[in-house]
Structures are given as C-alpha cells and as structure tokens.
Image (cartoon, rainbow, N blue to C red; front, side, top):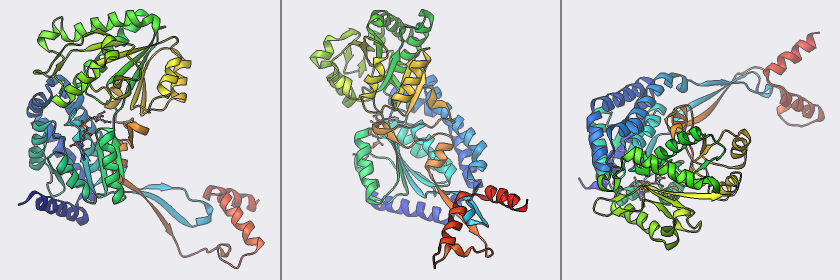
Length: 483
Ligand code: NAD
C-alpha cells in the first residue's frame, strides 16, 4: 500500500478505536500499562543494544536515564490511575442551590507524540504512559536520528501493545510533515525550539492543543562561599550533569557555569580532575566520553569552537576527531558573550565558565536571557536561593544538584517561555492528555425568581446576597435566621 494511504488507514483505525470507547475503561488503560512494563522487562537487553548502537550509551546510563525511569513511572501510574480517573466533587456557589458539581477528566482523543533522539526510549514512552493513562489513542513518531531505537520501538509496540490504539510511525521530516497535515486532538512534541515553531503553526490550523518540551541553555551557579568539601561535591555533580549524560546532548545538561572571578582557577582544576575521574587519563585515545550523534551536530559543535574569540578561551580540551565523531570534554573561560556558543543551546561537551565580580550578578545574567528549562544553583545562602526563585523564571530550579528532578513523578517536568509549553510526568502527564470537563447537575425544585426579569431592586439585593455565600454560607445563614 502507498505510504500515504497506509497512514490514512492507520489514522482511521485509531479514530474508530477511540470512538468505540474501548480506551476509556480503566481495565484497558491498566492492561496497556502492564504490557509496557512487560515490554521493558523482556526487551531490556535489546533496548540496551539499540541505545548503544545509536548513541554509544552504556547500559548503566541507559537504565538510569531511560528504562528505569519509565518503569518507575509505569508503577506510579498503575498505582494512582483509579484516583486520577475518578470525578472530583466541587463546592458550588449558593446561586446554584440545589446542585452538584464535578470535574470529570475526559481523554482528549487521538494524540501525536514526537520524540527526540537523545533519550529515544524515555522521551517516546514517558508521554505514551500519560496518553494511555488518560485513555487516548496515540501515534509515536520517534526521531530518525536514532534509527535502531526507532525500528525497535515500531516492532516492540506492535508486538506488546493494542495496535488498534497505539502505533509507531517511523520516518524523517517528510513523514512528520504528512503527520502534521492531519487533525489531531493533541500534539506532544519533544525537540528543538526551531521545529517547535513548525509544530505550533501546523497545530494552529486545527486549533490543536500542544505540549512543547524544548531545550535551551541551562545555567549553573556555583557560590564561592561553599566549603572546599562542598565545592568538590558540587563539581562532581556539575561534571556528571555536563559530561555524564548522553555526552551532554541533553536538554537538561549544564550549559554554562557562572562563578566569581576568584574561584575560576580552582574550579578549572577541579573540573579537569573530574574529567579524569569520569573518563580516565587518556580520553583523547580512548574516546571514553562517547560520540556526538551525527556529522551535522559534530560540525555544528566544531563551528562553535572555530569562532576566534571562543577558541582563544579554551583552557582545557578542544580535540576533535570527525571519523569517530569525538569531541573532547572542553572547558572555556569567559568566551565572548555574543558568540554562538553563548547565545545558542550548546548540546555537546563544551563547558563555558563565565566569571562575575559578585555571585549576586548571576541573577541579572540569567534574567537577561531566554527562560531556561532548568537553573542549577550550588549555594548554602538562603537569601541567594530566595532571590533566584523570585527574580528569575525557568521550567525548574534545583539547589545543590543537577538533572535529578527529571526522575520524580511528583514534580512537573517542562519549560516556560522559550524552553517549552506545558509539562508532564506522573499526574501531570495524565492532565496533559485530558480535558477537565465541568459537570453541573441541577434538580427541578427551588427556583429563585430573582434570576429572571422583570428586574427590580429587591432582585438585585437578593442576587448580591446569593453571590456572597456558598452552601456552607447558606448553612450559617440558616442557623443565624433560626436564632
Ligand atoms: P528536532 O527538533 O530536530 O527533532 C525532534 C522531532 O521533530 C523528531 O522526531 C524529528 O523527526 C521531528 N522533526 C524534525 N524536523 C521537523 C520538521 N521540519 N517538521 C516536523 N517535524 C520535524 O530536535 P532533536 O535534534 O531531536 O533534539 C534536540 C533538541 O530537543 C534540543 O533543543 C533539546 O534541548 C531538545 N530536547 C528537549 C527535551 C525536553 O524534554 N525538554 C528532551 C530532549 C531534547
């Protein structure tokens, strides 16, 4: 069958499945979540293999950042699903008396999930958990830049999941463009801000709601007032948030560091030691830090380094090898702020250090840039923490660590401004794929005439009174009148 015709057939089947109501039952949702658990458990070795093939990820990293987190989310959703699905009773104003109000979560319908290549399992399945929990049917379009994982997902999903309700459609930009011409009930996109704009304008045609999980430059502030042991621990965490997660090709990776001038040389020494601890003495020969995903991104990163102002600022590293797509963990001190390195998301193992006279200046520095996905601040100073929270805006703020908030199902994960729209994880994923339907039930007795014309002053007084009280107020009023 011609690909376009096949796509139409697939979408027709998915829409009919949703229309049939099959995906709305809690039993179906739970069965699908359990199948996903089974898939991850039975196919774990295969997942490790494809993640290694596409990205050179070690199995520990693959489990820590993808398989383990998705399994954790599945357990969490299975545990809470019934509570999430249940209508929530609400208190109504007296004006409606007697009436009952409820908020009923309703699945949005057929949803499209675009994922990116850096965490191709996690970023495909984590939103799928939300879509299934909410009772939606779904199409996943994995990134073509992680081809082994994309093909694995297509095969595994069709083997383990209800294929009338969940499908994987593989392909590159042209397939994405075809998908975007269709009418969806929600588009959930993980990727760059540039493609995010394409998604949003396509969605606007059908007024389709979107969640955009984008990237940006995550700043990290290191306070020089920390003791030397705290500082060492901070640098260890910063290094893992820079070089220990998909070779820094991560939306939440530490993008640049803000420190006081007096700390710069100590910090550079600590970072160099940290790189050796992570990857050994001979990283240039062993290439132990992992590869850049493809030539396009390799060349983009080399271009950042070729800027004369930037290359002058390299204080450690800087070797590259195009055949192996290798870029050495590189530290740069005070590169020009107008360079592309400092204006665009780096998404690679280059770490600029920007020095400030006073750590308080970091707040204005961050505030003057687009709102990041995360801000990391290493400090014990409560005033500085308070100022960061109240004077900057970001998807999240983490004090004294990096990235770990991604693991929590209780915290919403998402950006703000240029780093994204909407959030997910845990209940937030369920909400992302649900509509909160307002339901109000009235009865056929008690009918205050004040709501109807002809108007008079008494009716105005009466309505004023009704608007001031809820049911509880009515009870008080009644008790007052009885006395
Ligand atoms: P990308 O925007 O190039 O691609 C993302 C998805 O969009 C892929 O599935 C791709 O096939 C599709 N796509 C690409 N071009 C398209 C087009 N013209 N029309 C329609 N669809 C198109 O992003 P990427 O390179 O996969 O990922 C890197 C970016 O994603 C970085 O900016 C990173 O910060 C961000 N990211 C964000 C998160 C998050 O959770 N917030 C996670 C990972 C990556």
